[in-house]
Image (tube, rainbow over all chains, first blue to last red; front, side, top):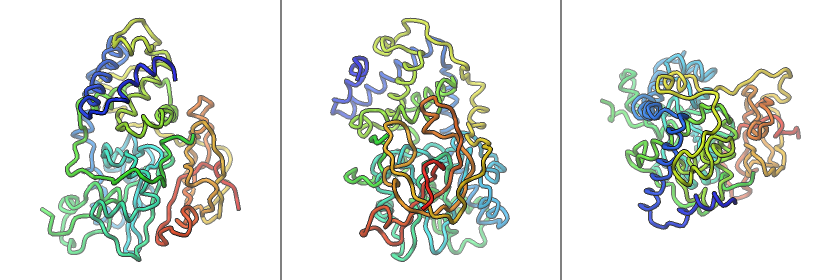
Length: 214
Length: 219
């Protein structure tokens, strides 16, 4: 480790959560200041990026994909065969959604998605990943003890149900198509989309029951 | 590299602790860290693979105790220094001290929608066809490079079945180190949990990885 790294690692030894956060606040502020002074970044571009992921790109995108797949067998088939293009047809493209795969839950098999090596996540359909998805407990245990992980999300699967864990080790990004809840035959796509939670598209949850529809 | 990032199957990391109605950001600096990381990525001075390697190269104790936006920020400092955009002295001072390298591109606010909507596809044409086909039985190699790789330790020297040929993609093990994109075929390879975790494994569980062709050999 070089001396400058030592200098910048001083906050490793802080044990106060608030101190640590204020250290990071200062550290990121310093970086933004330097880069702005050098003309290397446009602070307004940062605002635009943040606004995009706070207001435009999130799990509603994925819920739309799922509701359409539940309602339209042809779209479901397209999603199965060429998810990138099928999803792009709804306008969901771009960063961390360039190469999409849709995996379908069935009565026999439950799918669960993880990135054990970093934080790969389908931003174009689910937005920014939650903290737990990027943190060591989920990344370490999803591949060895998925049932234990699911219990922590309040999901208990039948003992005989098969579990398939997809470790996103390459540039393919996975969206789980959860099973359509019973009793939703009369619901339109908007009402169906309301039942589709973010976690159900990662595989750490199920779609909400029909009674939760608007 | 066998770093702290390679978490699959490790014990003792604690409960997952999902948060109800989790906000996208837990502090203002996280928003800036996201924007800075993407803005500096737009310089096109380094690849996503080099970024990942910079993150996994953090000291393990730092990596495991940091939030992901902190990991991103620390790796970004490394990349900016390595590529001559910012000096260590500047980071220490919190001020510009000298003019650094000029990037190929600077991301301005007007460019953001198009850049995010386009992304950065990393599939590439290759001249040779895929060596393996769906249904083939393959064994992952046993290797332990100190450099970047996307074959996790838990999936090394394991026998599985090729489930799908996914296309040809930039090879991160080379690309992370400036050795070129050298695209290879990528396969989804599925393993029974027993092959990975042994006798106590959940018999209902299968785990798949997406593996570049050079990670695999025929059994």
